[in-house]
Amino acid sequence: MSQIIIQEGRAVLGIEFGSTRIKSVLIDPSFHVIASGAHEWENSLQDGIWTYSEDDIRSGLQASYADLKRDVKEKYGIVPESFRAIGISAMMHGYLPFDQNMQLLTPFRTWRNTITGEAAEKLTGLFSFNMPQRWSLSHLYQAVLNQEAHVKDIRFLTTLAGWVHYLLSGEKVLGIGDASGIMPVDSDSLDYDAGMVAQFDQLVASHRYPWKLKDILPKVLCAGDDAGKLTAEGALLLDPAGDLKPGAALCPPEGDAGTGMVATNSVRERTGNVSAGTSIFSMIVLEKPLAHVHPEIDIVTTPTGKQVAMVHCNSCTSDINAWVDLFREFASLMGFETDRGQVYTELFRKAMEGEKDGGGLVSFNYYAGEPVTGFQEGRPMLIRLPDAKMNIANFMRVQIYASMETLKAGMEILSSEKVAIDRVYGHGGLFKTRGVAQNLLAAAIHAPVTVMETAGEGGAWGIAVLADFCAQDSGLSLEDYLEQKVFAGMNQLTVSPDPEDEAGYNRYMERFCACIPAQHAAVDGLK
Image (cartoon, rainbow, N blue to C red; front, side):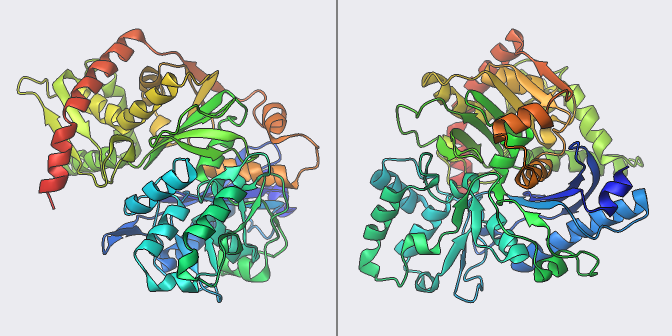
């Protein structure tokens, strides 16, 4: 059956550019993944800027799709030639300015950079709205403040998803969720906040740039809107072998936050999700605006424009990955070859045998700055009391605590605002081992956490679902489409917080907070 669906061009393709992997999936009309591909990549620190090269973006797109083609060929003996729809998603925010010929003016400045503090602070004051450092408008205004020569030549500013979508379709558009990570959007007009656009134009008027802000930003679209079609040039970029035909419909490109909400059926008010990979963030759909402006909390939107409170932390699994690689290297040294996935599974399971408070160990997984706790830079570090019980169980429990410790600090702010949450879903690689990170997240946020069978697929599956929604004609809202068609009958596992885990994590957090001055000292002293 899957072979026929692919042959007839009824499969839907979703591609997401994550921090360490570009994932491609094909889904059938029942939303099952019938083929997948991936390409591993990594950002690099160049001249103090976290970036991915333009060549890496293009070649990574091709490599991920080529891997999917190989999967299709091996499973079904055919090569895909067309799709019902295509969706592109990517990590949000960052800075991708282009000139009139769509030539990139600077290397891609990713969300991971914390180099726009002055701009973010001034824009927050101007708008009376929290403007995080990683947002595209903060990057743009910091370039203005730095008097960077390229600013006058900007004719288009977009996100990674928006640029890849342009390469495939020629359309300068963006889904509203991703657009809300460029600058604030208005949930009533479903567009950039007009008042703030005018304020920004006035702010930079003295520089006499030959552009106005609205003129250089992508057009805002909502889930289900027409976002163009795959062009001949786009088809050849995606599939240099020439097997792929143009013409597939493209949905509005979205950020990883939006696809995470879709992948966990968390687009209704009072629902939320936590995405955990290289970075970790929570998304809670609000019933009403927050009473106060919090620098730790971002306000973005669902793919349909509803306001969402977002707690974003730059580091999650990178330090765990480094330790796992160290353990595997030791095993190899001793003559034992190991499977990476099995090592993760066994170490994660062992963490649940650890002491509830980590046994006197504290870990900072800070590969980059963490605005929630006030850091512009980070230094991964492990601290322990002299009498700490340094065993694998405690060590791994603390590593998993560390992956979400900063998120926990931010979620406590939403608790103080009395934000109502009916359900929270977890998705991303951290949740692949059942009964570990899910249980500890529930303890961290003091709420039940559900993981669905799509948790491992994450955003690539989520953007494929959005692409399917764009191509359908059911007349349903996105909220009802997900509820009635996508998630009806889907397997899921819900766990409630264990009071002992909650108490233990709270004790761990007391030690973590007490060690924050040590992290500051490490940042200042270790260059």
